[in-house]
Length: 130
Image 1 (cartoon, helix red, strand yellow):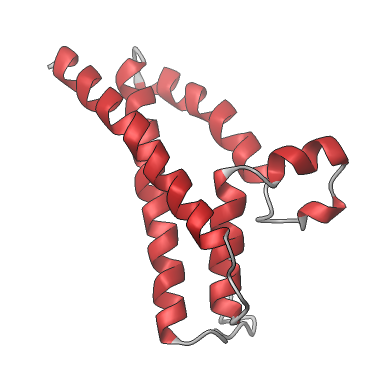
Image 2 (cartoon, rainbow, N blue to C red):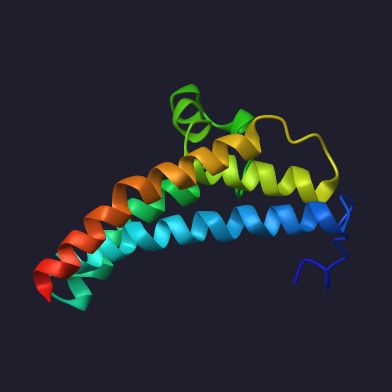
């Protein structure tokens, strides 16, 4: 959709690949969190209801839609230090050809940390359920 409305990748093929890799790593980490929630839930509806309060603040209180400098101070503090903002900012900087800084490292650290916590929990709950 972005290309259809005029967006062009300015960072080059390697930067685009790196941005895609960051996004896929973050999606992989979130899949472990959601698997843990799903395995702990009694049914599919309960799992869906339990994930909404997790995803809503991470998505809408991030830099995905609005620059965090326009947010109130208390919301900026949360938005600037959460995994969606780190991943979105790093991917955006990569595809626009801008300096990435610590954004990519923060995104990778968040993703690895989420996997480190939730993968063992999901596996443990899966083994108990099976």
